[in-house]
Image: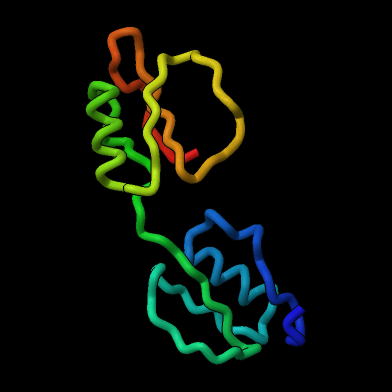
Length: 122
């Protein structure tokens, strides 16, 4: 606990846009000002009960423009645009784990190796 009045943590907002998260935070605790920042950004190191940093990243997390391309080419583009992920090419219908991983992108292809749907992190 921070010692501040009202709600002071919002883990349920991970994955939301910065603007949406800031709106929810300020609605749930009107005593704070939610400030959206691009990760990484320089900030002051002081602690204040009336301020919440909302960190967002600018890394690409979906690639609708790759539908129709060869899966291997799509995987290369994905890894070039977001170095934090591993793109895995799979034939449509292949069984996979159902866990969500922010460092993985499934690239679903047809029997000709063509991307069927927009690859996205997960």
